[in-house]
Image 1 (cartoon, rainbow, N blue to C red):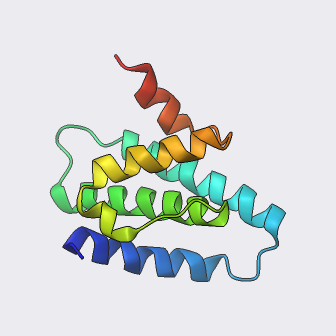
Image 2: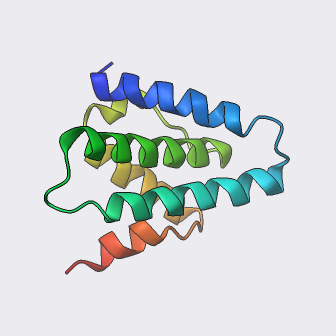
Length: 112
């Protein structure tokens, strides 16, 4: 597994632990809020953002996205995150196909 995948795995474990015990409705709401909040943080990074901060924001968003996907039955292989951008887009597409409206996905799909 790539270093990014290992960081993602650690972040995902922490995120899953923070939602342990949530019922299905609470979990769905919390995960959508997590994804939206982390997408906003990721989107607020400017061109002058430091590399560690940018990586942390990406890992945080991807962990929330993976957790949401898994909770909705989307199979996710963390090894696919050796190419994070591609894996992220594929997961966002899979969630969109299940009717999950992701604001980050809608912005990215709209283009410039």
